[in-house]
Image (tube, rainbow over all chains, first blue to last red):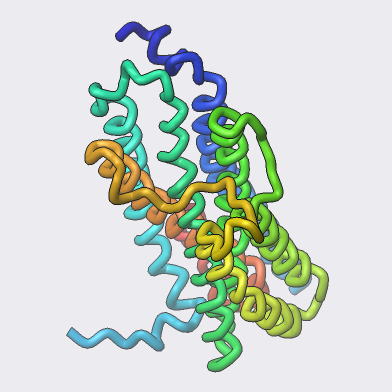
Length: 56
Length: 250
Protein backbone atom coordinates (compact mmCIF):
# COMPACT_ATOMS: atom_id res chain seq x y z
CA UNK A 1 0.00 0.00 0.00
CA UNK A 2 1.48 3.35 -1.03
CA UNK A 3 1.13 6.60 0.88
CA UNK A 4 -1.24 8.12 -1.68
CA UNK A 5 -3.37 4.98 -1.58
CA UNK A 6 -3.52 5.29 2.20
CA UNK A 7 -4.64 8.92 2.09
CA UNK A 8 -7.21 8.36 -0.63
CA UNK A 9 -9.02 5.77 1.55
CA UNK A 10 -10.52 4.10 -1.48
CA UNK A 11 -11.92 7.42 -2.71
CA UNK A 12 -13.40 8.38 0.67
CA UNK A 13 -10.34 10.28 1.90
CA UNK A 14 -12.19 13.61 2.16
CA UNK A 15 -14.81 12.17 4.54
CA UNK A 16 -12.40 10.12 6.65
CA UNK A 17 -9.83 12.91 7.06
CA UNK A 18 -12.43 15.61 7.70
CA UNK A 19 -13.64 13.45 10.62
CA UNK A 20 -10.20 12.58 11.95
CA UNK A 21 -8.99 16.15 11.45
CA UNK A 22 -11.87 17.66 13.41
CA UNK A 23 -11.27 15.19 16.26
CA UNK A 24 -7.59 16.17 16.37
CA UNK A 25 -8.37 19.89 16.12
CA UNK A 26 -10.95 19.85 18.92
CA UNK A 27 -8.88 17.72 21.30
CA UNK A 28 -5.64 19.68 20.84
CA UNK A 29 -7.59 22.93 20.86
CA UNK A 30 -9.27 22.12 24.16
CA UNK A 31 -5.94 21.39 25.85
CA UNK A 32 -4.41 24.56 24.38
CA UNK A 33 -7.31 26.77 25.50
CA UNK A 34 -7.18 25.34 29.05
CA UNK A 35 -3.43 25.91 29.27
CA UNK A 36 -3.62 29.53 28.14
CA UNK A 37 -6.60 30.12 30.45
CA UNK A 38 -4.49 28.85 33.34
CA UNK A 39 -1.58 31.10 32.41
CA UNK A 40 -3.90 34.11 32.36
CA UNK A 41 -5.39 33.22 35.74
CA UNK A 42 -1.99 32.84 37.39
CA UNK A 43 -0.87 36.18 35.95
CA UNK A 44 -4.03 37.86 37.22
CA UNK A 45 -3.67 36.42 40.74
CA UNK A 46 0.00 37.47 40.86
CA UNK A 47 -1.02 41.01 39.91
CA UNK A 48 -3.56 41.07 42.75
CA UNK A 49 -0.95 39.85 45.23
CA UNK A 50 1.49 42.56 44.11
CA UNK A 51 -1.18 45.26 44.40
CA UNK A 52 -2.06 44.12 47.93
CA UNK A 53 1.59 44.22 48.96
CA UNK A 54 2.11 47.79 47.74
CA UNK A 55 -1.01 48.94 49.52
CA UNK A 56 0.30 47.74 52.87
CA UNK B 1 -5.43 1.29 53.76
CA UNK B 2 -8.16 3.67 54.70
CA UNK B 3 -8.64 6.71 52.55
CA UNK B 4 -10.53 9.66 53.91
CA UNK B 5 -12.50 10.67 50.82
CA UNK B 6 -13.99 13.71 52.50
CA UNK B 7 -10.52 15.11 52.82
CA UNK B 8 -10.53 15.59 49.05
CA UNK B 9 -13.90 17.34 48.97
CA UNK B 10 -12.16 20.61 49.85
CA UNK B 11 -10.72 22.42 46.82
CA UNK B 12 -7.49 23.16 48.69
CA UNK B 13 -6.72 19.45 49.16
CA UNK B 14 -8.18 18.33 45.83
CA UNK B 15 -6.06 20.76 43.83
CA UNK B 16 -2.65 19.16 44.59
CA UNK B 17 -4.13 15.73 43.83
CA UNK B 18 -5.12 16.83 40.31
CA UNK B 19 -1.55 17.97 39.76
CA UNK B 20 -0.44 14.36 40.01
CA UNK B 21 -3.37 12.89 38.06
CA UNK B 22 -3.36 15.09 34.94
CA UNK B 23 -0.03 13.75 33.51
CA UNK B 24 -1.13 10.15 34.20
CA UNK B 25 -4.38 10.58 32.22
CA UNK B 26 -2.55 12.52 29.50
CA UNK B 27 -0.11 9.66 28.98
CA UNK B 28 -2.85 7.03 28.98
CA UNK B 29 -4.99 9.04 26.55
CA UNK B 30 -2.11 9.49 24.12
CA UNK B 31 -1.08 5.83 24.19
CA UNK B 32 -4.61 4.43 23.88
CA UNK B 33 -5.81 6.78 21.12
CA UNK B 34 -2.61 6.40 19.09
CA UNK B 35 -2.59 2.63 19.64
CA UNK B 36 -6.28 2.29 18.78
CA UNK B 37 -6.02 4.35 15.60
CA UNK B 38 -2.82 2.56 14.55
CA UNK B 39 -4.64 -0.74 14.89
CA UNK B 40 -7.66 0.64 13.07
CA UNK B 41 -5.73 2.00 10.10
CA UNK B 42 -2.91 -0.52 9.73
CA UNK B 43 -3.94 -3.82 11.31
CA UNK B 44 -7.12 -4.45 9.36
CA UNK B 45 -5.43 -5.70 6.16
CA UNK B 46 -8.25 -7.90 4.99
CA UNK B 47 -10.43 -4.81 4.62
CA UNK B 48 -7.99 -2.51 2.88
CA UNK B 49 -9.14 -3.56 -0.57
CA UNK B 50 -12.72 -2.83 0.38
CA UNK B 51 -14.09 0.26 -1.35
CA UNK B 52 -16.14 1.27 1.68
CA UNK B 53 -13.23 2.62 3.68
CA UNK B 54 -15.37 5.40 5.10
CA UNK B 55 -16.29 2.93 7.85
CA UNK B 56 -13.08 4.11 9.56
CA UNK B 57 -14.99 7.19 10.71
CA UNK B 58 -16.50 4.89 13.33
CA UNK B 59 -13.28 4.98 15.39
CA UNK B 60 -13.99 8.57 16.37
CA UNK B 61 -17.75 8.66 15.80
CA UNK B 62 -18.84 5.89 18.16
CA UNK B 63 -16.33 6.79 20.87
CA UNK B 64 -17.39 10.44 20.76
CA UNK B 65 -21.08 9.46 20.84
CA UNK B 66 -20.56 7.29 23.92
CA UNK B 67 -18.64 10.09 25.63
CA UNK B 68 -21.33 12.66 24.81
CA UNK B 69 -23.89 10.58 26.73
CA UNK B 70 -21.59 9.31 29.52
CA UNK B 71 -20.28 12.76 30.31
CA UNK B 72 -23.83 14.03 30.64
CA UNK B 73 -24.44 11.32 33.24
CA UNK B 74 -21.21 12.34 34.99
CA UNK B 75 -22.34 15.98 34.94
CA UNK B 76 -25.70 15.06 36.51
CA UNK B 77 -23.93 12.86 39.10
CA UNK B 78 -21.83 15.80 40.33
CA UNK B 79 -24.80 18.17 40.09
CA UNK B 80 -26.84 15.85 42.33
CA UNK B 81 -23.97 15.45 44.83
CA UNK B 82 -23.80 19.22 44.90
CA UNK B 83 -27.54 19.62 45.43
CA UNK B 84 -27.68 16.96 48.17
CA UNK B 85 -24.48 17.65 50.13
CA UNK B 86 -24.03 21.28 49.08
CA UNK B 87 -20.33 20.83 48.36
CA UNK B 88 -18.57 23.47 46.28
CA UNK B 89 -16.20 21.01 44.63
CA UNK B 90 -19.02 18.84 43.26
CA UNK B 91 -20.52 21.87 41.50
CA UNK B 92 -17.11 22.79 40.15
CA UNK B 93 -16.68 19.27 38.73
CA UNK B 94 -20.12 19.48 37.12
CA UNK B 95 -19.22 22.81 35.54
CA UNK B 96 -15.88 21.41 34.36
CA UNK B 97 -17.56 18.43 32.66
CA UNK B 98 -20.01 20.38 30.50
CA UNK B 99 -17.67 21.92 27.87
CA UNK B 100 -15.94 18.59 27.24
CA UNK B 101 -19.32 16.89 26.88
CA UNK B 102 -20.43 19.58 24.45
CA UNK B 103 -17.25 19.15 22.39
CA UNK B 104 -17.78 15.39 22.13
CA UNK B 105 -21.43 15.95 21.18
CA UNK B 106 -20.37 18.33 18.42
CA UNK B 107 -17.73 15.84 17.26
CA UNK B 108 -20.41 13.11 17.14
CA UNK B 109 -22.64 15.27 14.93
CA UNK B 110 -19.74 16.37 12.72
CA UNK B 111 -18.32 12.88 12.10
CA UNK B 112 -21.85 11.54 11.76
CA UNK B 113 -22.56 14.10 9.04
CA UNK B 114 -19.54 13.00 7.00
CA UNK B 115 -20.38 9.35 7.52
CA UNK B 116 -24.00 10.04 6.57
CA UNK B 117 -22.93 11.80 3.36
CA UNK B 118 -21.06 8.68 2.24
CA UNK B 119 -23.56 6.03 3.22
CA UNK B 120 -26.94 7.81 3.01
CA UNK B 121 -26.05 10.59 0.57
CA UNK B 122 -26.94 13.40 2.97
CA UNK B 123 -25.08 15.35 5.66
CA UNK B 124 -28.15 15.81 7.78
CA UNK B 125 -31.61 14.35 8.27
CA UNK B 126 -34.19 14.81 11.01
CA UNK B 127 -33.76 11.20 12.05
CA UNK B 128 -34.66 10.47 15.73
CA UNK B 129 -31.06 9.67 16.71
CA UNK B 130 -29.61 12.78 15.08
CA UNK B 131 -32.34 15.08 16.34
CA UNK B 132 -32.00 13.91 19.95
CA UNK B 133 -28.19 14.21 19.77
CA UNK B 134 -28.62 17.79 18.54
CA UNK B 135 -30.94 18.50 21.49
CA UNK B 136 -28.21 17.12 23.77
CA UNK B 137 -25.79 19.70 22.34
CA UNK B 138 -28.33 22.45 23.09
CA UNK B 139 -28.75 21.07 26.61
CA UNK B 140 -25.00 21.30 27.26
CA UNK B 141 -24.96 24.84 25.84
CA UNK B 142 -28.02 25.76 27.93
CA UNK B 143 -26.32 24.48 31.08
CA UNK B 144 -23.19 26.53 30.37
CA UNK B 145 -25.21 29.62 29.47
CA UNK B 146 -27.26 29.42 32.67
CA UNK B 147 -24.09 28.86 34.69
CA UNK B 148 -22.50 32.03 33.35
CA UNK B 149 -25.67 34.13 33.25
CA UNK B 150 -26.02 34.37 37.06
CA UNK B 151 -23.24 36.28 38.81
CA UNK B 152 -23.69 34.69 42.24
CA UNK B 153 -21.92 31.34 41.82
CA UNK B 154 -23.94 29.63 44.58
CA UNK B 155 -27.19 30.46 42.81
CA UNK B 156 -25.89 29.70 39.31
CA UNK B 157 -24.56 26.33 40.54
CA UNK B 158 -27.91 25.31 41.97
CA UNK B 159 -29.99 26.56 39.05
CA UNK B 160 -27.82 24.91 36.40
CA UNK B 161 -27.63 21.68 38.44
CA UNK B 162 -31.43 21.54 38.43
CA UNK B 163 -31.55 22.12 34.67
CA UNK B 164 -28.98 19.36 34.10
CA UNK B 165 -30.91 16.91 36.28
CA UNK B 166 -34.17 17.52 34.43
CA UNK B 167 -32.34 17.07 31.13
CA UNK B 168 -31.21 13.58 32.13
CA UNK B 169 -34.45 12.15 30.65
CA UNK B 170 -32.93 12.79 27.22
CA UNK B 171 -30.14 10.21 27.63
CA UNK B 172 -32.31 7.04 27.51
CA UNK B 173 -34.29 8.63 24.66
CA UNK B 174 -31.09 9.04 22.62
CA UNK B 175 -29.99 5.53 23.53
CA UNK B 176 -33.23 3.88 22.38
CA UNK B 177 -34.01 6.29 19.54
CA UNK B 178 -32.74 3.79 16.95
CA UNK B 179 -35.19 1.14 18.13
CA UNK B 180 -38.21 2.45 16.36
CA UNK B 181 -41.24 0.54 17.67
CA UNK B 182 -43.27 0.94 14.50
CA UNK B 183 -41.51 1.59 11.17
CA UNK B 184 -44.68 3.20 9.81
CA UNK B 185 -44.60 5.81 12.57
CA UNK B 186 -40.95 6.76 12.49
CA UNK B 187 -38.35 6.07 9.85
CA UNK B 188 -34.92 5.77 11.45
CA UNK B 189 -31.97 6.23 9.11
CA UNK B 190 -29.43 5.59 11.81
CA UNK B 191 -28.50 1.94 12.14
CA UNK B 192 -28.71 0.00 15.38
CA UNK B 193 -25.65 -0.95 17.36
CA UNK B 194 -23.70 -3.64 15.52
CA UNK B 195 -20.83 -4.23 17.91
CA UNK B 196 -21.23 -8.02 17.94
CA UNK B 197 -21.16 -8.34 14.13
CA UNK B 198 -18.07 -6.22 13.59
CA UNK B 199 -14.77 -7.86 12.64
CA UNK B 200 -12.47 -8.49 15.63
CA UNK B 201 -9.61 -6.15 14.71
CA UNK B 202 -11.98 -3.29 14.02
CA UNK B 203 -13.71 -3.86 17.35
CA UNK B 204 -10.40 -3.82 19.25
CA UNK B 205 -9.31 -0.59 17.54
CA UNK B 206 -12.67 1.01 18.24
CA UNK B 207 -12.83 0.01 21.92
CA UNK B 208 -9.21 1.02 22.63
CA UNK B 209 -9.78 4.43 21.01
CA UNK B 210 -12.98 4.87 23.02
CA UNK B 211 -11.08 4.06 26.23
CA UNK B 212 -8.50 6.66 25.18
CA UNK B 213 -11.34 9.19 24.83
CA UNK B 214 -12.32 8.43 28.44
CA UNK B 215 -8.76 9.13 29.60
CA UNK B 216 -8.68 12.33 27.54
CA UNK B 217 -11.95 13.42 29.14
CA UNK B 218 -10.57 12.79 32.64
CA UNK B 219 -7.48 14.80 31.76
CA UNK B 220 -9.24 17.90 30.38
CA UNK B 221 -11.95 17.86 33.07
CA UNK B 222 -9.27 17.87 35.78
CA UNK B 223 -7.39 20.63 33.95
CA UNK B 224 -10.58 22.68 33.76
CA UNK B 225 -11.54 22.09 37.39
CA UNK B 226 -8.09 23.38 38.38
CA UNK B 227 -8.80 26.58 36.47
CA UNK B 228 -12.25 26.88 38.05
CA UNK B 229 -10.75 26.41 41.52
CA UNK B 230 -8.13 29.11 40.85
CA UNK B 231 -10.82 31.42 39.47
CA UNK B 232 -13.26 30.99 42.33
CA UNK B 233 -10.80 30.76 45.21
CA UNK B 234 -8.37 33.43 44.02
CA UNK B 235 -8.97 35.58 47.10
CA UNK B 236 -8.19 32.80 49.59
CA UNK B 237 -4.87 32.53 51.39
CA UNK B 238 -4.12 29.02 50.14
CA UNK B 239 -4.35 30.02 46.48
CA UNK B 240 -2.14 33.07 47.04
CA UNK B 241 0.39 30.95 48.91
CA UNK B 242 0.27 28.34 46.11
CA UNK B 243 0.85 30.92 43.40
CA UNK B 244 3.82 32.38 45.31
CA UNK B 245 5.31 28.91 45.81
CA UNK B 246 6.84 26.87 43.01
CA UNK B 247 3.82 24.67 42.54
CA UNK B 248 1.84 27.54 41.10
CA UNK B 249 4.26 27.84 38.21
CA UNK B 250 3.49 24.38 36.88
